[in-house]
Amino acid sequence: MAQLTPQFFQTILKIEGGYQNRADDLGNYACGQLIGTNYGVSAVAYSTWVNRCPTADEIKGMTTDTAYNFYAWYFDRYNLYPIQSQQLFELLANNTMGSPANAARVEQTALNKLGYSVAVDGIRGPATISALNAAWQKDPAKLYNLIRQDWITYLTNLNKPQFLQGWLSRLENYFPPIGAAAAGSGMLLILGVIILLATRSKQRA
Image (cartoon, rainbow, N blue to C red; front, side):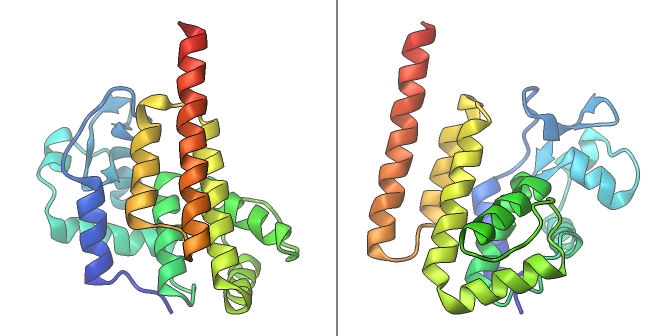
């Protein structure tokens, strides 16, 4: 079974960095106020965890121990620990940190493409977990790379260019495709996305 290992937690801290309160990031709001995010723990997710409205000072002053406890709760809340592969768990955890329901939908859609019949309902329930573990046992690279590719497509379709390059770099640096051939195709996909965005920007100009 997968775990929130100290090594993966350190990766999360490295990826997420410290406090930020960008007004164009909806995750920074809780109870109608701009609160911010620290160590990747958004104000909205933190408020669900503690069941109250946090303050900006509370988020700013968050310790790494608090962040660890939050992520331990968060990954359990979205049923990630029954994943048998630590490598797959870490990719799915990364996606879930971006959007829990949409991460699950991407997994479910990928599973259906691979011949596993699961409902695309955005809930990572027992049927989805069972299919994920079975698909991983059968062909780890195929499952991992398909979910990763479909997540990139989802991120691109959000049409948030101010965040997209960071999201793509995060995947490339910390959650690369499995296998040399997959790595090449993954880079080509990302380059294609960047070119597409550049083209759209020129058209708008």
